[in-house]
Amino acid sequence: MCLISTIDPDGSPQLTQTWVGTDGEHILINTVEGFRKLQNVRRDPRVAVSILDPDQPRNYWSVKATVLSATTDGAAQNIDELSQKYTGGPYQSWTGQPQTRVLLTIRVDFTD
Image (cartoon, rainbow, N blue to C red):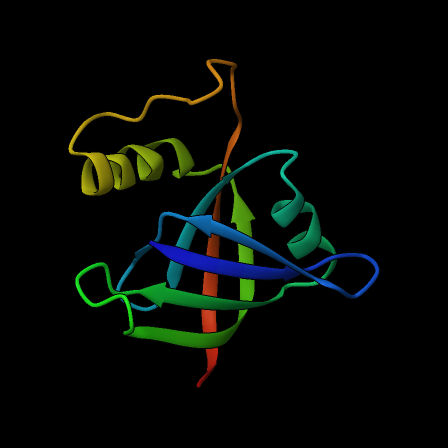
């Protein structure tokens, strides 16, 4: 599990808990078209990401990063992979409504 902080139009932080993955080089976060974090990174790609250790709640890793891309390519497959990782089953939309999934590819710029 992770927290991603994006920057709202007024400059204030917007924080979201989300599933997280990696391609071995970049952080991968899956979101939905229309969500605030996606609107924010399209305007300003700077983010902070904190990854939490589920076994040791006091342990976490934080990075300052930049969103390199936001694409629908591979996003549906990625959300199914993340769902398997986090729930052990296929992805099921919590809203029951059709969604356009978007995959964020994030480059780590600095670790805290």
